[in-house]
Length: 358
Image (cartoon, rainbow, N blue to C red; front, side, top):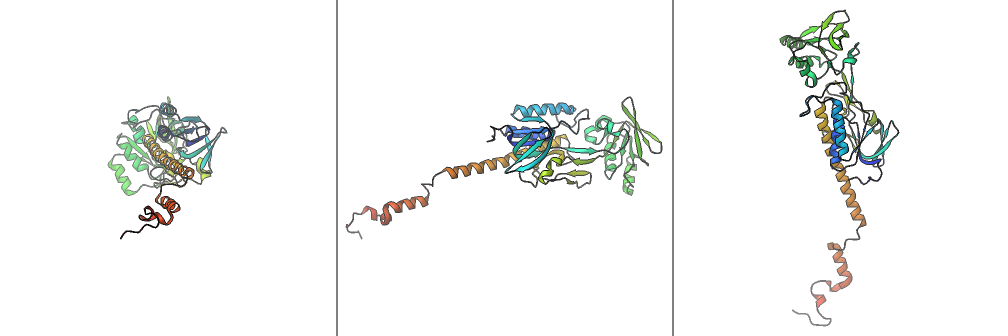
């Protein structure tokens, strides 16, 4: 348990971000009897979605309900959740200070940053308003809900063909809109044709919506194509602002789909004492993966604190202990002071002047 418990602003760990990764990490730390504060602005990336899918035993749960339950679990184990936005984090001695938009200051021994990412969507009229509803990105998150319906895939980069093939598993009415995605390779054309995926040239100008439902898209040429859902690949950008003061910034993902903060498999960053988890560290994580990453980072972080606590306790023990009286060296010194030259063999047991034997 923390040794700073008397000051509620001094804690073992500040968790920045209260999504699946942050809350899972906070629960793990609180169950290990660490003092934890979660700072969260209440802007989950999946907020527009109707449900979270692929989460075992909780499939379809509303994003807000999942986070509400997670917050309750954190507080049940003694953690705190603060509705605020962390605006900066800086080194302070052997710890860190986190400052919020509301003027709060928390000093922590360690940081777990789980701020997620921002989806940079294509600038198409009406698209943002449908995001998370019938404008989708992930076949595993939303594909079942649009199965057997006409699905469009908007090409904005090299991942479009792969995305179209994934949605083809769910519907035999898939159309790839080349939009701004550039030319297709010859083998891509063949693969699309083999799977019966139509390809439409020209840019998409706007979405067609009727009765609060997507019914199609309109091209710049004026052509209208009926659809029930549109899959897009946004650029995925890590929310790394709070890390800037610590010298950490996001780097490009190997697949060029966005950027993320570098860390090892546990989430440990290049800055000692700072961990990252969830989409800020891996833009491809879904809710399940982000939650697992939060637990993994929390376990590594707690182990780091255990090592630090043990080292500090050992130093205190050694500093507060008198010179060891029962080491071999101490025994030899004491014997020399008391017996002098008589300390070796049996000399000290023979009376002075008595003849020696042998």
